[in-house]
Length: 123
Image (cartoon, rainbow, N blue to C red; front, side):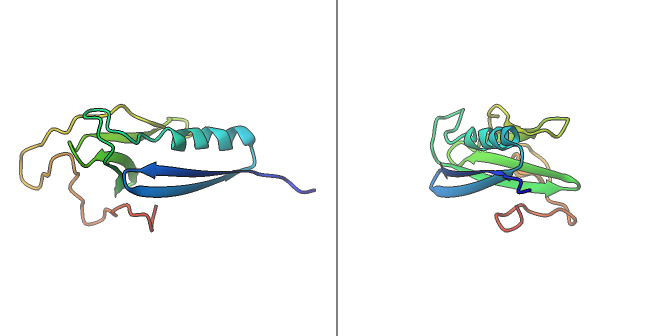
């Protein structure tokens, strides 16, 4: 018996970057749910309205943070995950507020020695 999987291909423009996603799930609703969270990725800053945004992220200890950051005002929207692990959603935009103190660079977290920067290669 051949089990068919739903395959969804998404082309998304984010700032000056074109991103391709391919989703393959056995359950159609799961594929569509994941596709919805990727399609709803913000492409315009919710604070200043600028289209110059970028997908970025970082890992700290056991956590992975995926964000869209505005290159104009540095505001960000972060991807959240439902507590039951059933999917993802995009949080509201947060205004950039620089933080003072040693090793602080605004809202960019200090990456510890055991942290791994999230890049397209290890995403």
